[in-house]
Image 1 (tube, rainbow, N blue to C red):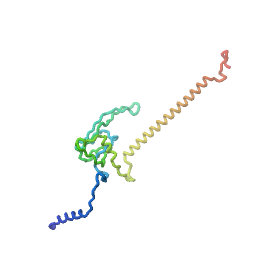
Image 2 (cartoon, rainbow, N blue to C red):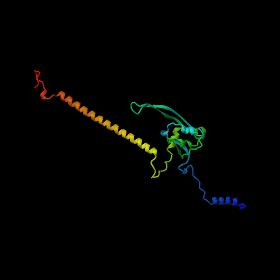
Image 3 (tube, one colour):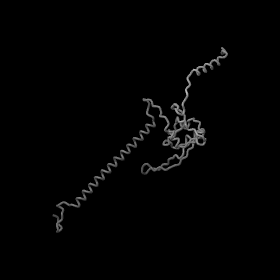
Image 4 (cartoon, rainbow, N blue to C red):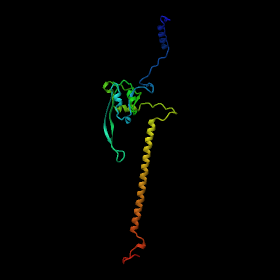
Length: 219
């Protein structure tokens, strides 16, 4: 069945009429900030403590707009006789938002949860060169990242939380053991000092049966 001539025009006019009857709402920006969805892709925040300088984000970025510099430091062994380790220390982490296309690949590939989406959007500049933001600015945006949605009460505990709790328990047990050893050492030292003091007192003041007479004998 062929469409009725002019039906498309009628549908378009119907949409226009419905729109005309609605009340116009003006957003009072910037006096009133818009309520953005939680997953809004505004800017990228950096949680520097989680970054291991693995370079995955910079390598996977299709626009090559992430700049990372680092150096290596030697970490002393954790226990006597252990080997020294080397670790990467972050010197620079910058994102050029004049090149970024907000694809989110860098956030998805980060294995250590160092990058997050922030709904912040007020970062316009008059100079395009000022759209390259360094790690200090990225860290400021990190505190505008909304909290993740709550987990299902019946869901398993995330493995990251379990690993963190296990590590914290190990550290707490190590501190408790160290405190117990220190207390035992202090108690032993106190008892040794008391014994030495008693021996010194006995040597300085011998018993009456051991006092020597003037002719060299004992009384």
